[in-house]
Length: 316
Image 1 (cartoon, rainbow, N blue to C red):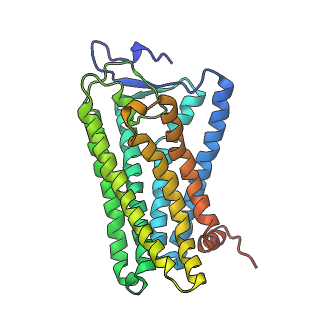
Image 2 (image 1 turned 30 degrees about the horizontal axis):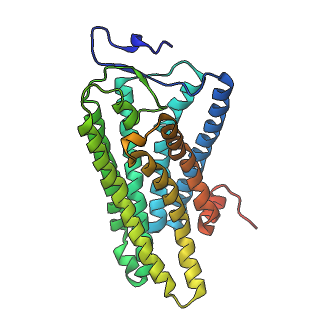
Image 3 (image 1 turned 180 degrees about the vertical axis):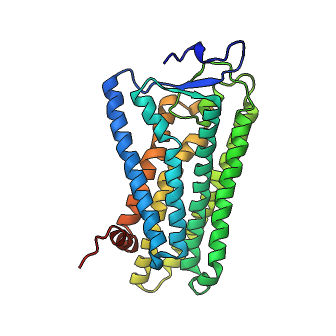
C-alpha cells in the first residue's frame, strides 16, 4: 500500500487518510512480533473473559470487590480490542492505512477505556479502604447502589473525556506527512501531524491527564496510606496478613498501569521519543491487560476456586 501523498484527499490541505509506520523492514522481525502480540492478545481476552464469567456466575463472588473486578475485566477486553487487531493487521500486511473517521473512532475508544480504568482503579482502592479501615460500616457504605453508582461514574467519565479529547484533536487540520509514527491513533503522534499552533491541545491533554490520571492516583495513594496505618496497629499477625493479601493484587495492577501511562502522558513534550512511546504503549495495551487476570487469579483463592468451577475442574 502506498503511504505517500496518495493518501491525501485531492485538492485538500487536510489529510483524510493516515497510515501507521512500519514496525520493521525485516519480515522475520514483524512475524515474530505478530506472534508474540497475538499470543498476548488471546491470553488477555481469554483470561479477562473467564474472570468476568466466573464472577457473574458465582453468587459467592457477588461482593463489591469482585463487582469492580468484573468491570475491570470487561473494560480490559474493550481496551485491547480497540488497538491490537489493527496493530496485528499492520504487522503482516501492507494494509497499514486508516481513514480519518476510523482513526477518530479508535482514539475515542482507547481514551474511553483508558480513563475508565483510571477511575475504576481508584474506586477499587476506596472499596479496600472502607473494608479494612471501617469494617463495621462497610456493608452500608458500599451497598450495591453505591457500587453501581461508582462504576457508572467511572464509565461516564471515560466517555466524556474520550468524546472531548477526540473532538478537540480532530477539529484540527492535518497537513501531512500522513504517516503516524505509532501503531495506533494516540494523541501525541497525531498532534505532531497537525497544522498550526497545537499548544491549546497540548494543554488540554495535560489537564485531562492530571485530572483523570494523576487525581485518581492520589486517591489510590491516600487510600493505601490509610490502609497501611490501619494494618500496622492490628494486634493479630493473621489479620495483618489477610488485610495486606487482599490489597496486594490491586496494588500491583495499579503500579503496572499507572507507571506506564504516567510515563507517556505526564512527561514533558521535549522528552518524548517515538521508540519509547511505542514501547510504553505496547506495555499498557497488551502486556498489562494480559497480566491483570494472572495477577488476580494467582493471588486470590476465591477467584481460583470460581475459575475451576467455571471450567468444571473442581478438585475432589
